[in-house]
Image (cartoon, rainbow, N blue to C red):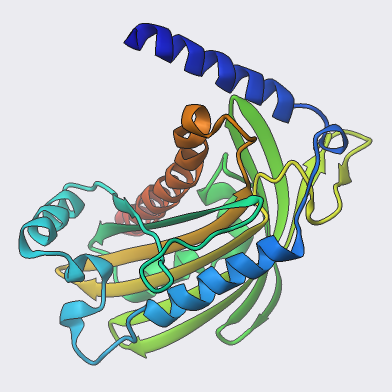
Length: 286
């Protein structure tokens, strides 16, 4: 019975993949005002729930708020070079927030970069012109459009292939805040997301914003950086909005859809760690 269920699930996932692989114009979904309003409400509550960085370094990172046993296990995993990641959900007065025609994906993850200072870690994070080299293949293009002090406007072209291939042109408004010599934060929000049709071909074109296959409609990320324990901890909290799963397929493909944001955040954190370590190794090599 279990084998039969797995076979049926693969069949439906394949059908969904075929459907979503159609040209965007043939399978477009519209981002409605009610969906945007629900996402903004979710963000408002999420940001209100975020702890204001205090002068105490004992509770700056999310992992420091975990129960003692889980916290100790998380720090042990981080020292082994692993990414510690968990799904979150913001509630409204104890109840889930309904998002008509959309899905919100909310994840938080942390990685530890041994031997790296806060300045060295931020140097890579803010080197957006070269993110296409650090974070390939997920990032195909990267460019700083505007930079003024702690403010950045960045253009990124994302590539994702998991049965279905999607390529997105995005712009991100990013603001950094220095807490002290050992801690910093940043907040990034998308200001434009457009799916790319026929990417890299002579007839390449951008689909209208909010009228595409709905792989990604909005994304906010909240970063915290803390130098301690002989290295720097990097924490990223990601809240993204995609189209809803077609009616009747939720129980079959829900985990498949939700796995993509988790994998993307895990890749970003793990690659940040390896890229900073490679930079450090290059500086110390003869």
